[in-house]
Image: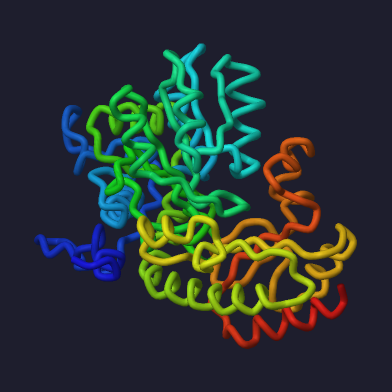
Length: 386
């Protein structure tokens, strides 16, 4: 089946058995526990909803299908998914190589929880440069954690090349694929061992559910992470699973519209005299445009824009927009805009932000599915105030 067919049907096949209802939409199972006819026979394999729930199971099957994986696991948030992976795979003294330009919440989790409290070491490396990755590997390196494109600077990492570096050394390669969604990029087919998503973003797509997911093929890795999902309990609720199942049905259509709008806006901004730089993988000016064409099926709806001027001007611009909500998060049908230095990456030390290129006038834009001309008009009016 093609992507949009899988996004609608996988995990939600009607049940025609005697006594079944034939639902065309996965039912919302709110029950916390499941009765059994005999002590040693859980009904349908279900015992307690933390361990397994029919609605979450339907979602996990669909997530796996979309990422071309054997297994999918759904969590209460993207950070809950990250926590489960680290708890499942690492111990004190282990070493992780991490993309330097990384979501601020992930950096906070790594630095202030797992490193400072549990003695797991992290090396923040520009994974777009393979030689730097090779130089950072030690005999304690167990995991390579890649964001591609990165948040917020949209740097790309050659996933196949990272796999070629990691696999011979027995290092697990995880790719955070949130920015691209499974529609535009499938890291497992490029050699990654695990794929992680914040389902709050494009996968759900409607800004009304917090969630995370891990997709993978390896049986042993799956058993380790599934054990931690149940043992630590950071599972996605049945209701949120239901919302994400509903959102996924339009994922393919939404991603096409996100990318189409983003391309038009990026081209408009690149020509504007008040704009210093536009970072979008679909522009030929992006330093890794060729890699984007090679490992992605489209360029997504995320971009970064740096304005001429100072922080006051950047604040004025984002506060004078009418159609772009000034808010964190991304990937919803509505357009969002934010200042990383003051919002999503405020927890990253200023010195580190400057090294990465996250200036005070850098703006992150999540382009929605509204009319592109309306969005461009809104941006044009707000830029007049800068």
